[in-house]
Amino acid sequence: MGLDLTLFMTDWEHLRAIPVDKRIEALDDIWSSEFDEEYRRGRSAGGWLWPADQGSAWCAEYVFFTTTGAYRPHWRAGDGWADMRLLLDASVREAMDTFLAGLIWDADPADDPALTGGGGFFPPTADPRYPCVLLVCPPEAVPGKARAWARVESRLEELREPFAAECEGWAGRPDTFEDFTALLREWGGVTTEAARRGWGLVGLP
Image (cartoon, rainbow, N blue to C red; front, side):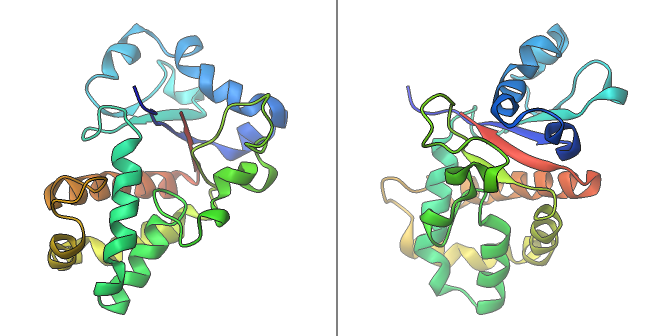
C-alpha cells in the first residue's frame, strides 16, 4: 500500500508540556479523539482541518489536495529537486534548498531531523517502541522557509527546463512539471501559515 503522510501544524509550547514519549501518540490520536465528524468528512476535501473548538486548538492537520495522503509524491519531489538543483541559478537554488530542506529534501539524508527525533523533541526512530517521524520542522525554522518560498514562488517557471532534463519520463520522479510545482505551492502555503502562527510542523506516517 505504501506510506502515507499526516502533516500537523502544532503549537510547540503545548507539545513541550507533553512527555517526550507521549508526543507522537498525542498527535497520532488527535483526529480521532478531538476532531468531530465534520472534520473527518473534510479529510477528503483537502486543506487545513481544525477541531470544532478552534479557540482552544493547539494543532491542525493539513490534507494535501494533490497527493491523496500518500508520502510517495513528497519524496519523489525531493529526489527530483536533488537531480535538477545544480542546473539552476544560485539564487534560486539556495532559496529552494532552504525552503525544501527538512520538509521533502535533505542535502545529506543523515542530517534529516526526523531521524533523530527532531533534536530530542521526539523519541529517535531507532527506538522500536515508537513509530517513526517523517519530518520535524520546529517553529524557529519555519519563518526562514516561508521567506525562502516568497523569494522563489514567482520564479518557479525557471525550474521547467531543469525538470524536463532531469525528471521528465523518469520513474521515481514527479509525473509532470505541473504536479511538481502544485506540490511546492502547497508546501509554500503550509510554511507561510505556520510562520504566521509561530507554530512548527510534524509529519507522521
